[in-house]
Length: 307
Image (cartoon, rainbow, N blue to C red):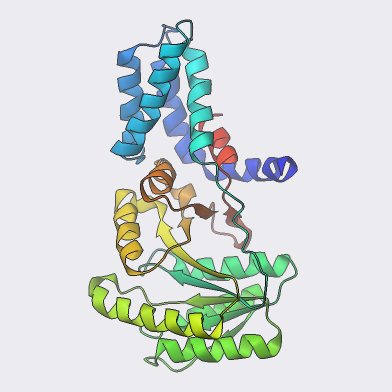
């Protein structure tokens, strides 16, 4: 695991450059005078966390933990507090491996999220990750509502080397999933990744579609590994947190994929999602390339953010 983490760290360092430059600069400034940590310093640290999109509740949790450690050790210095801050982030983001366990094939990954977050692109990159592991991957174009969604998934399928099961635009998404599951079984597929519509403005229709799709998966993929990944755009900050809460009401989310993390200086959103929703971040997007979707690692994230 340590070797794998060392391999991830350079990617996280590069991908989180904007966040690191912003947060580390502010944290370093707070302790630049070398003064003994006090309540005023903790208040300033709390403000840094909140403005980095960590959220009020999560920021308070971090500060309360730091305050307790300061209370137990009266000799603690500002430099050591920075180290403790990093340790607390690591502890809060200590998540299990994101890898989908494949006990019986095909494993099914249902991918949800609003339009515009990079959902279809992420599915293509996820397919490429599994292909690189030697797994046979099939994609299901169950977003039959959005114009060109099927064609876009086909393009990403070709790039990743994965076939796509599709119907015509406007077709029943559940029927697409049924056919995709049948094809996956017949072809000996390891992983089936299902694209879905993202019409959050019409939550009732979206909910009914997802319920139908879930029923098909539960019936046709009984005994197989099943995941539901929610794709969120990190650059939207607290709005991403609101989307996650809404989707959590609609379906059982087992993991988060956070895209465009390289495009924001507010990487604290990772903390907010992990702690406030109690949903693990499984993968993060750290660039535009096919290889830039990476398994999330809390320790590598903390190291990359605070150095």
